[in-house]
Image 1 (cartoon, rainbow, N blue to C red):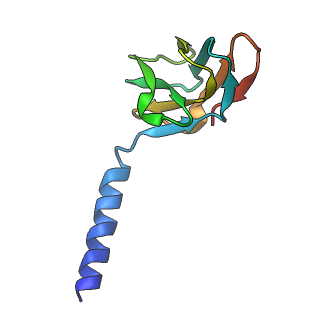
Image 2 (image 1 turned 90 degrees about the vertical axis):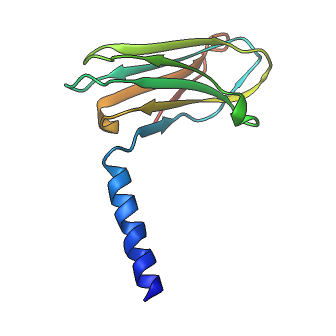
Image 3 (image 1 turned 45 degrees about the vertical axis):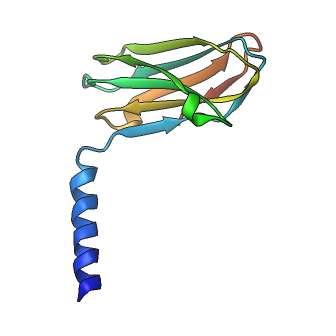
Length: 121
């Protein structure tokens, strides 16, 4: 009986949370010599999005991420983010969209010096 109540409560919380859940997209990691990286997100959908957060994350130290917010992001516009890295290492781009469908966004993460890019999915 207790298990049933816990399962029902878990399902209720999961359902309630999913209505307002943010969409998260992540790139593959890129090795950088510590120069400049860019992560550009384009709203290819038909609706304006309230907030898009673009974070550049050190793969071995995710707590040290740097981020920018774009508000609002209109259809057919971009949220560009350029970051100067302080150290060489592997980094990835994490995009958080407050409300929106993942299918409506395109994003690319690039190391400027090497020209290497990774699609953000």
